[in-house]
Image (cartoon, rainbow, N blue to C red):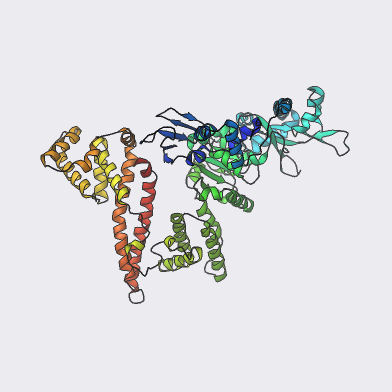
Length: 639
């Protein structure tokens, strides 16, 4: 099929919507490493990954064969397809409306491009007009409001281009049409004027309002938000939808916040214009506002392009409307969060304040601290479920439990679900530790009655007492690599040797695998008997030869290749991850022991002993969860 030429708008929309990691992952097994993803290059044979994908740059590059480009180029190369075929396929996949560009349409395209440029121009002039009006006698009340009520200085007012729309019905209309001679149709297309019902004249869309220009990502004015200075409704009025402005796809102040979002690897979303402006004025510049509407997926995906770890904090007002806005936003983002595509947190400021009000009383440092401690979205939702509820009342207890079950059913990841089942069980037990396993078992029976593998231990006693029934993650291969990593760091990074020794002693750890344990004994012997720590590798090799020992299983630790050299650049994280992995093995052994003892004890006969074993079991379980957090952030990248 002959594909007609695609419209430039279609091509640009596809490039904006597509995610290169999603595209490449269908053809290459990628693994997260730092800010990028790596895998084996599909364009040449290799055994060591040299193919890198950058989400922030939306580019790929192979350090082996120098292949590189964007998502479209990748699919063209992999599938030997034409540019149009790839773009059309991506448009269908990402539900982008397809427009074609036939020869007869070229003149129309040029007209449209010219129209858009004229709209940008006229909106920029309108913005200057509003700024000028703010400094005139008619704008005195608006300027006083900004400086006194909002505590904004002239520098911030200028930075955000704030202005004033005069009270008169036709002031802007006369300025742009009669003085600047712009066509009236352009003003209407830009959303600056409206036609009267009589059809014989026009009036200004914004009147007697404080004007807040809204910019696109390139910093061009595309619309306005207007706050009334009187009793007019609505309190805030946005520009109507135009060719340039779509409030569901636009975020206020993103043009000013994007660089800080990338630098801090975190984006903060607030509800109102002045919340964002006040935070920027206070030096907290990774903040955008949602234009008073529910946060949409388009807006979220825009933000996520600028944060590698996909950290997003919603700071909506703590009143009922703000809570509803947060819940609506969560509804839009939930699927992304469940899949791990966004790390979502919710911040409600104390005393029901919004960000602007909060900064009138507290310092920016206080706000940053609240951001740092903002709860994860699931924790926040659980807090909302139990808020103002008396769980001692049977009806309220039942309502809370039912809402918890509904929430827990939405969590697909078994580890995450187990964690929150236990959290909910703690809340429902009202501080009585003996009730936690009972409440947890009740939740499990409602959340996943036929999914025993997801039943969190030690919530349910198993009839079969084999340790295989316990969903633990002990993996000899992972342990092998963790111990090897720790030994390699010790051998090649003298500056980390003391830290490794102290960590092993502090946690009372030993190497579990016999060949690693033997090597560690030889290391301790050499260190104790010589001051020449820098020649440790050479002396160990000699010792192995002298003892006539088999070196094959450990010889790879004495040499470095490109990958292991890179691993040593993050030796501190490697030590932490490896130590956590080793401790987890010991912790699992204790867990199984306590589990068996707990299962063998009948609580009806010896409640105190059963409770004692359960508490030990619970302690080990929480420690296992903590160790998983310590090791997962870097171990899979390092080994």
